[in-house]
Length: 450
Image 1 (spheres, rainbow, N blue to C red):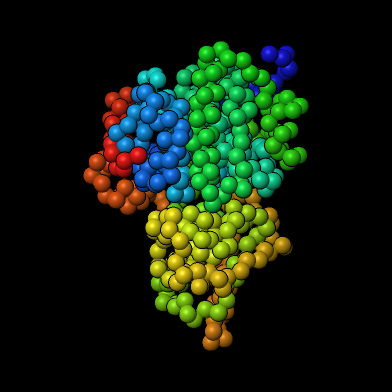
Image 2 (image 1 turned 45 degrees about the vertical axis):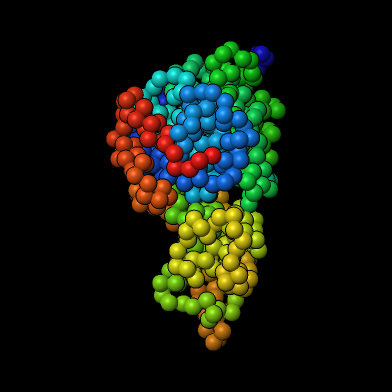
């Protein structure tokens, strides 16, 4: 271990260890809501064919006490964290956070559930530690600046291990010194490239981050050595990943005032596809309700601020997986069918009836607009339709659509399966150790066979 001074890393670790989110009712309520939303995504995602492939590949047959969500299987905690993280993100239906520019809950909650197999704690402890982990992940996202994502990193994968390590450090009441080492061990496992969007590897990023953060915390608790200055070191996290855009003060300034889960808060997805495509989805559904027929449209133009469609890497998808990242497809499906369902985004080839309209769409950027950033007010899309009769339609959507109560989403995502019906009400009220045990038992039921 070096003798390098680490004031920034130490301050970050101190904020994590000494946090008290349980005193904030708004943060607790927001966390409960987000956890329900995550379980909707994870139970549905457990049925995806690729979730079964991953489970087999990482050794889900290994003995252990950790649950595999949506099955009656138990396995090793590290295996459970990667499988459950994957299941929560595989449908691209899980929440997003602007400061992260990624998906925090599907990384943090699977790791905490896996940890429950190794040591006892309460449901209230889980909620509080989740809030702290999200705060750490979001603050790291703010501090690293926009170039990290723009240069090709997937923030869910790179920031996620640190968020998990922070959540576990808070949960286990780790010392500041141990926390700093754990954060560094998590950061050294940070990886994940946006080039994987549209492939099975993209949701694997979430599971990978969950497992890496859990492993980092276990190593640090065991006395395993690591650099205690991952933020301060001249070749540390910011140096390697920020590309000169770092803002170190954002790490701890006004920590928890308010909590990041409260403001800017999470966006709970209304549609099972990439978040950046949601504004055009809402516009498509709106026009469907107004009776606009697809055969009246000659051309479609989406105008984005610079950088706003960076995640939308597909223009001509061949299957539903790729289509999650195609605003051309998303708008067409929304306009023609009036809704976006899970079966719009499965492994089957895209339907020609939808692609016929998608092929008339193009994108452009308003270079005079502010570059899209973590500030949600910089996000917009303008839709211009040229009709075959010579008419035009212009619509604009600012910000992101979302749901505030995921209860109906949970019911739809779990296909109304009565085995899982009590989960939302339990999460709304859970506090003690018995509540957490009950939650684990409800999640540990067969919705699918893998």
